[in-house]
Length: 351
Image (cartoon, rainbow, N blue to C red; front, side, top):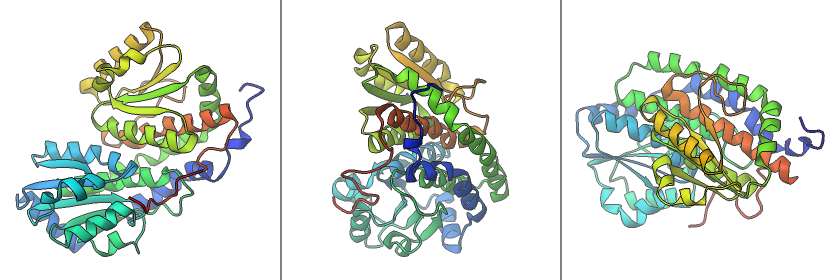
């Protein structure tokens, strides 16, 4: 660790939320359960009683729905992923009895979700994933799955990874995968997350030197990695005010690749096997053209971007961890406390 790197400044409330993620994941995985209302909706979906499934949320809740989008699409359903702000103003025709709404909101009371409840008027049944049992969204949904992340200081971290577990639980349930199998799979993520976070000082101290001279950042990936790409770009801006954009790997080649240079850092997520070689090619092309790039993968290694092995369906939970280390590293480099809001608030109540 560099002698002039003081990590004590990052050890605030946001930092404590990061380290509390294993406990939050354990509490959530142990308490995930179905209900009569959820069983009814799942049966209707499997029997093709819904013409479409609409997945909606804002911020990290929106991005975290990408794995569910893929799972339900691959199961043969017609699925639409849309921000709640777009749904309530430009896609209201989707709010009908032939649509199954799946909404994710940590607070259950953000401005857009409140408007959705008003505009829907119980026309489309809603399955909700939330961390707040007494929220308007929880009270007025047809079926609810609760996460148990506890209170969170500011930037979404433990609520996000717990939502990913609940999303995985819901996706398997809707696709008729036995709950016993899902619970066994969910439990495999706890030890890898704990092990990774225990080495946070090594991770952060390894990242900082490679950020010298970096003025802009991109996160890129494909498939289910788009959850970490979108959420990662969001939390880097929220927690450190550092200019970051999240794009698909292919989208990055269509224009932003022109920005590659020594002041640009690109974090590439290797993702699933079917597009891994494409992502590796992008990494090599960025480096060949003078850019700084690293790859988040499950290949063996000792750096912050090397992830422990987990089932591919749980990879999104681990993929966000290196981005969280980046937030600490950028804060330490710039001498500021990460996750401390100046203008924003934990719950967005203004449209």
